[in-house]
Length: 596
Image (cartoon, rainbow, N blue to C red; front, side, top):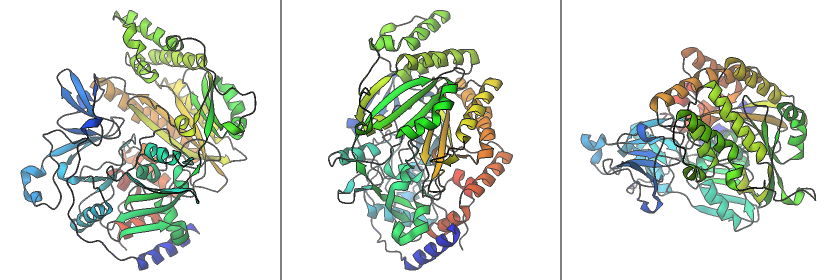
């Protein structure tokens, strides 16, 4: 049924389109933003960088003596990496063409070196159209790139990339129909601030506020709540610049199945330049953070999911502690429920379970412990400092995880803030993340796939002695109407999202490589084994390239079964017949589309 609807939609759309792009010149790229620089004394990325680098989604680091200067994404590369204007005649200069920029994702886990002339930051729709048209005519890659916050390399391609970072404006806020239309390069946080003036907000938010809107939608970002779908579900209109058909606008009313496919198009159908999304009234949430035992978490899960608008678990491996975070609209919280309730004591006292262990470890290693330095550190920084002593030693990880469990037990409480301030939170330092999604019944009747998954995962971790860092996060969502969303399914479907993590707490390359090998090997393999019976697939922003031919074949079979790959590839062949928008990872998953 979906295939037939898609076929009709695609055929009708193809007949209507004509190329309508006029050739223009493009402006110089990478505008200076020196005002966004700040100083940092250290970085885990220091040993990874050689020459110029753009640390997208976070910071660009350039060595300055014993310290490192950190620069936001908008800043230009260092002086030895010049970005040339396309079409200005410099393409024939071999020396200029060899100048490169290193592009690194937020997690510091993926990096590509791209010729600087092949890295574009247009400032207008016309520039996007001209760049895409020229690259299409020459058959040259131009992978859409957002803030590169994805822990994997889904946005990266060393042969060419295009970022919408300079196209970051709110185009319209329709208070009658409660929608917002934005350019794709705007950050989620900036869009939310614009809506705040109109007493509106977005219907769902992921944990990170600095995502560009285009990437936010295209990878099916999600929050948590059994009645709340991933963000792409709430998109009502998309504008894309496609290589073969130029600029197109898609809506559900006009384009049906094609629109539902394109909402999570992974940047493969066109460069997203504008997004229109539904909005909801702005509201405050009352957040309650508390801990349960594993048995209590299993027993109370269904009740908590139905009782609260937002609910997530954070399981702490090798402990009997599960952190629970619930959020509910302030006007729906029962009378007598605290709006603010914080544990007594100073911040130092609240951090004591972590800082006491840090002092103890310093003593064991004969290292001087500077309490004043530690007092200025946040939760994530202290956790990194703890793990850095020996992040793969199982006994050490158990000690760190127990300290974290004690921290959360000591810091139960309530707070009330605007919804965006609570639903977006600190995800910690550099890390490997593997997040997966699978169906777990309906919003009314959970079939307990979620419980069985966690039980088997924790059993596998502890039986095999995997040094699993904390937390393992468990969230839920309603189904998405987008056919390429990991949470696509029946309208009443309930989906579970589970993310494992291992931090990269130091700049020691041997240590980082050892963590990488463990995480992408036995730890991720365990997740795949547990998830296979429940049709588990990866979050698109956390999908990693398989490490063997056997695993690649297995992945392709799973994804062929779970997604409408044939329809998706037909759309790719129509919009991007030369496959200039893709990359190695996505071609591995879907294959290279063939022009019909």
